[in-house]
Length: 506
Image 1: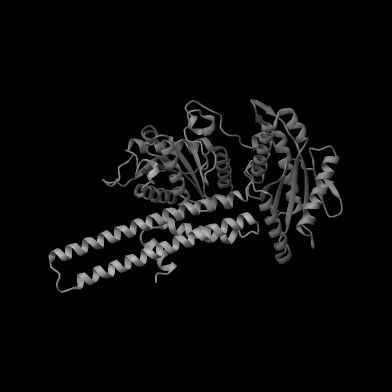
Image 2: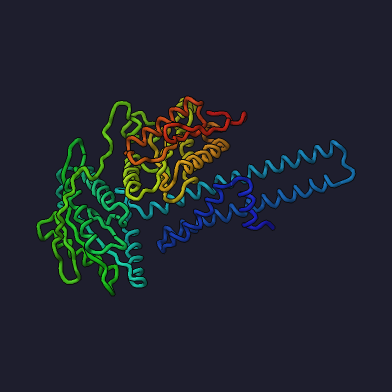
């Protein structure tokens, strides 16, 4: 009887890397998201039931294939075989192997789709939908972890609360859409100023929080004040206007014997002291009383880099929803918006300058996507994009991020990766997509991609690195598409394998 490990080995031997990665995602999801909520319990049970059913089917297919191979082998071993019998037996063996490969490919596709669904579910369960920072649930988990580490290892942690001043009045005066934009702006500012110093979360309503593991009250107070000043200096762009908001803050460092609730209560008490003092200020609770935070370094608006100004020919840099010609608007699982991605690029470039760590970007384009749309319509285009996003996500690490830049182009950020790593990932992805048969509902059987790969330099900014990657994509189009081009110094290197005659470029 075929075991589960036998199946996994056969799939891996047949080139089912995504199948194996999907299994890893399943196990990781079970380990990291073991919660008691009824909804997630049902989701986990349904998912495991589907995987068990898929395993049984594959096991039956593998066992049947083994029996067929044994029968054919016995025929070949017979002394009575003539030339025609040998040819027929070999033909049967080839057909059996092809059937097995198709069955494994189908299983891989189903498991990959399930893995993407689970990964998306896990991320959404811990992310605030409006502001894209961590939600209250993720915050509570981090607080619990910090309290445990303090008790076991003595690791200090500090908690900060910010509250947008007079937010109800802001909503009433400017509308709820402007209010939502104000919350997104605050989240952007907090995340940018803190960078990687702590977990940023939406605490609830117009309140935001940060947990700074390893930071004492002095450093936390400085960061808190920098955030407050940056919020005051950063305009909220809504309805063609630039609106202004401020925030009050409270800080508390975890003390011996405290619980998560004790820590939050002291930070909230400090926040109340800030409101009582006239708002737009911060207080630190030292365990006995709340003291006003004074920090002399002003934070100017330029410290929070905005998205680049629109220029001639820059339409591809901006959000699909701002482009009336965009065809496929449906969100893709684990694919961020351009605004979020640009924010991540700016943050990562800044981090690279400080820590001297490499950063590589892939810009990936679906070849001849306009022909897919014109020949088969937007439904087909949507299927192609969903399949492409699944392939891209299956190729990435947890720290990597992917965005859809426009109708047919994705961008991938690889922190810590050098150019050679990016070229290898892009080439493996190109080959995998080239071999992939699309689902029947796609309307087309095959599709290919091209990619430009660049590594960030000390002088790069958001616009520069995107433009360099875009230039490589343009060169890929000149080379005939279905290729990967990497930039190195002043020369570009082309990595390409000709498509098989039976795998036409759409």
